[in-house]
Image (cartoon, rainbow, N blue to C red):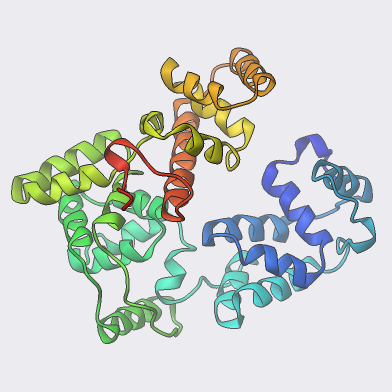
Amino acid sequence: MPEPQADRNGVERAAILLMTLGEQEAAAVLKQLSAKEVQRLGAAMAQLAGVSRDDVSTTLSRFSSDLDTQTSVGVDADQYLRKVLTEALGADMATPIVDRLLGGRSGRGLDALKWMEAKSVAEMLRHEHPQIIAIVLSYLDPDQGAEVLNGLPDALRADVITRIATLEGVHPSALSELDEVLEKQFSGTNASKSAGFGGPKVAAGILNLVGAASEGKIIEEIGKNDATLAQTLRDLMFVFDDLQEIDDRGIQELLREVTGDKLVIALKAADEPLKTKFFKNMSERAAEMLKDDLEAKGPVRLSEVEAAQKEIVVAARRMADEGRLQLGGKGGDEYV
């Protein structure tokens, strides 16, 4: 029997929506997502089964769309997934991803690491030279890089972050050799990628997401050998409480990017001044609704609060990079 719509989570609903679109349209959506988001959606699409038209209709209503005539639900999910991911990512990248999602082999080379669990990546890297680890972590998304860093021995972490922060690039031939080594571990081949990564911002982005306890220890250890670099990393870092330093216009821009549910969870452990900052940049009705939601929300695990806060911080940093807001306090870059 199909699952009741009430039991569908957001990823499953998004997967149903994508499968109601034509392949070209779904591929266009996937092109806008990160590797981790594509993986989560792809996994959900691969696992969908027994989706009724009532379920589809309910999902589409939640997205304020009526796409019944375009639905692709009912076709072979494996075939649909392979076609859409190939259109979105190209055959070279899509094939290993689809194989992994459908129970086949994992991906290849450096790109494959983005589709692996952080624990597995950390285990694979823990005995490598710190410079190799630094290059790999620079290549990963910051949140995955932070998880991998947390999985490494304590003695390695500060050394790796220092190397990331001082990494100005990698010669293409060296990167190609690293890619080939990883390919051998995955029994595959892959072309080398751009060498333009690393630097203090990448290191700070990873540190932002490793957790306060680990972050402090790593910065302290770096400071013993390079006080200037340690201060540079502190200046580049940005945490949820620092949203207080963003101007009103920036907060209003940020609110357009953040879902109400995510904001409620993130604000559960926030100080009153930061809550007030958000309230005053919303309409009176929206602010009252948010206050009501905060009061009605039951206990939330600290891990959930931290995850929601990290997601909002990542959004703020992305928007700052796009020039849509200016980060204040220790995380801000000056405008000239």
